[in-house]
Image 1 (cartoon, rainbow, N blue to C red):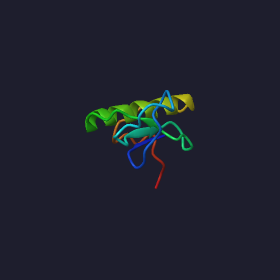
Image 2 (image 1 turned 120 degrees about the horizontal axis):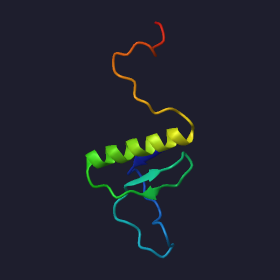
Image 3 (image 1 turned 180 degrees about the horizontal axis):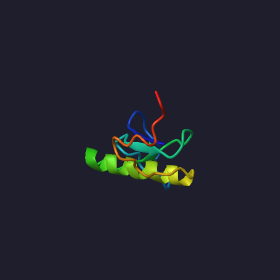
Image 4 (image 1 turned 180 degrees about the vertical axis):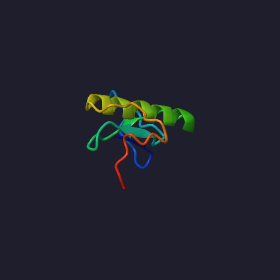
Length: 78
């Protein structure tokens, strides 16, 4: 999963739609060709990225509970 603007992606919905001028898009998986992402601000990009990370982790059954900084109960010994 990732967000990027390194290459163009086809517009969603119809092969006859005009391509977007912006290259901003995101990938649901490593082999997903990408879907357009309507970039507005860096803050919103971070929110959208975190939301997608949490969705992917939940789908994989991985706990998304944030452990407080400084909590040593979950750290491996050095």
